[in-house]
Length: 246
Ligand code: 5RP
Image (cartoon, rainbow, N blue to C red):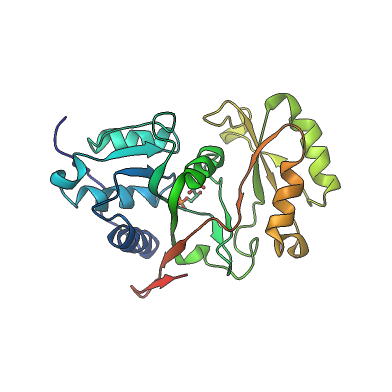
């Protein structure tokens, strides 16, 4: 295998720069020499994670294996000439680094803006250490304040209409099946399922664990994009070049 390398375009605006800052800070702190099995999350912040890991050098990376959370991160790992693994072979991961759509004061997260939250949660649970990296726009007191689209819910296609009805009964204001551009059809996840975005009011979002449990109980729901009490640390890159660590 050729030595690891990756071309990531340098940040051209403050949001991108803050993603890069968060990602680099997290890698420097948590992807230590003894990390051999590394989970790679999804989204636009994660390429900076891989970029920084590659910069640790081929000597360190040649003995490591990298587990993706979806198609995008698989491509990233392959493009960087890093060794690709699967959670089947490596059910125990040293560290997984991922992005988030929003993080509250207790490190609970909304994830699934990219429809990858089932695999992301599997890799979060499989990891000794699960770390989140994000730009300053994701840092909230309460979930749902900045991320208005709702809680991503992955559903078996057969059950989507029933689950939409169930979500309304649970108090979701206007749950919607996520559609491809031009409403060409429903978005289909890497697992062949549909995604519903279910907005809830502040009362429900203040207790994400209860909400997660209620949604997860609905037959047809495969996974919910609420990640409660899972993150060991979260790094936000700020506009002024500082990093907020939670
Ligand atoms: C995908 C995710 C992403 O991690 C989340 O959407 C954050 O993405 P970005 O880094 O582009 O803001 O949960 O399912």
